[in-house]
Structures are given as structure tokens and as C-alpha cells.
Length: 340
Image (cartoon, rainbow, N blue to C red; front, side, top):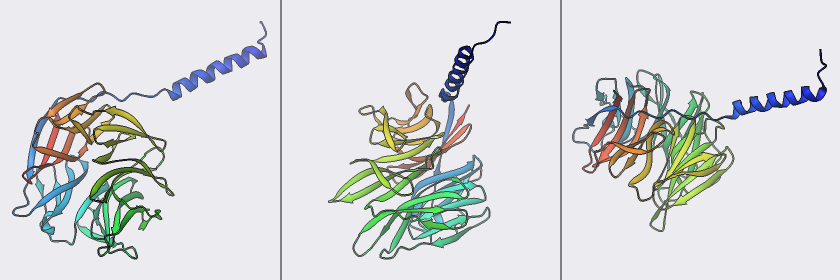
């Protein structure tokens, strides 16, 4: 038998290593999303009360929560059981602005009145009240988590007499909600998504100075609240699969390694940002001047053409999607799509 040289062994090992590395690092492209939905919509009727739904979360198509501010606290929390939307009409001292859950029996409610509430599968109760010295109000506006012991809430605290305000971030560790030591930053934080790969938070916010609203985007790594982008207009943050995307006006950016990379520039197309929800970067819904549009990895197509409804947020499952909308005449709707 011919002896094998050391050089041959090394060359073979290099080829095997390169081959394995190529297979490991090759990115997997998400499947193109389907568009054959059957659509219906339901009006949420709070009686004579004024209501504006602002957030939605669900564990399944048979267990969905939608919340928002109302002129009467008994009409601020709505639940869908698979057949109908209803509220339990129990007055509570809540002004809900955010909702997120880890399971049907553990759902959290953020408020703009210093409190966080919890649903245990049977009833809602106040979990805690959180105050910051020198400030009168704490607003928990956005929520997101990775597990029942790793949840974040973002918002701001405000002094009612001076109108001074600053950013606030709270973390739930499975036992208590604790306020993070955030450097003083004059901004009201709004939406938050936790990067599944690193745990870093990607956050949208707004400032109001000299009668001008400015949309801002940040990341929070536990030490630094770093601004990524700021413009007059609007912004949002959405998780699509295991990736985080943000919108600023008519542009979509992908968050990567503490930076924003321009992904789609929709300027002038009528696609005005605000990714509503989605399964991946090749299967998501977005608002536009022609109604709700869908992106399947190739193009944007209008799939629901009610132009008098403003899409707010949504929750998506394997074959169904639910999106809350606010109409120009002050009515609230839930648009429901089910794959045919």
C-alpha cells in the first residue's frame, strides 16, 4: 500500500474543515409567505365609551387579548375566545398601553399610571406599583420577552408640574419587576423587541421639543441607551422570526450588531412603514395608502383594501392573523385573516 504523506493528511483536513464551515455558515432563506387569506373584520363596541386599542397579544387563535385607553376603565381590556370579542366590564384602575404574555396563564399588562398588572388564567390583579423619586407618573408603554423570567417593559417617567420626562426600562426576572439603571435620556420610549440572538433591546421612542415631534430608535445593552436614528415622523420596531426590523417613515431597516442596515426603501410607493406583524422577513404585513400590504420575499401586494382603517399592531399564528385597526371616525376593528 502506498504510504500517505503528512501533506496529504493536512490538505484533506483543510478541505473537510472548509466544507463543514461552508455548510454551517450558509444562511437559510425563509419560505415565501402565502397570500390566499379569507378575510373578515369585527368592530369592537365599547358602548358609549371612547376607546382606542393600542396593543394586542395572543397565545393561540382561541386566546387573544387587545387593550387600549378608554373613557371608562371597564372597557379597556378585551379578550377573544375563538368565537367572540368581549370585555368582562369590571372597573379597574388601569390605563393599559402594552400587553405581553409567556403563556395563557401568565399575561402582563403595562399601564400609564405607575402600575403593572398580571393575569393568572382566571383574573387580573395589580402586581405592583413603581415610582421614581422626583417624578409623578411612570408610563409602561411597550413590552416584550424571551421567557416567563425574562421580560422587559419600556416607557418613561414624568414630573407633572415641570413636564420634565426621561426614559424608563424595567426588567422582570421571574420574581419581581426591577427598574434598570438607564442613563438620563429625555425621550418617551414606546415599542421594544428583544434581539433573540444577543438579548439586546431595540426600542422606538419619541421626543417633543420646541413643538416638534421627533421619532427615535435606540438599542439598550444593559449599560448604554444608544441612539441609532432620529427623524421627524414615525417609527416602529417589529420582530420577524429571529430577526428585528425597524421602520422609520417609509424605510425599513434591519437591526444587526448594534447598527441599522437599510433593507427596503419604500419612499414614494405609498408604503408608509409600520410593519404590523409577520412570520419572517419573507412573510409580513405592512400598512400602506392602499390598505394592508403583504411582502412575500419578492414584492408587496395589497391583500386587504380598507383604506379608511389605520393598522396599529397584530399577532400572527401558523394559519391565522389578527390585526387591530383604528378608523377615522373613532371606531376600533380587528381584521382577521385565515389561510384558505
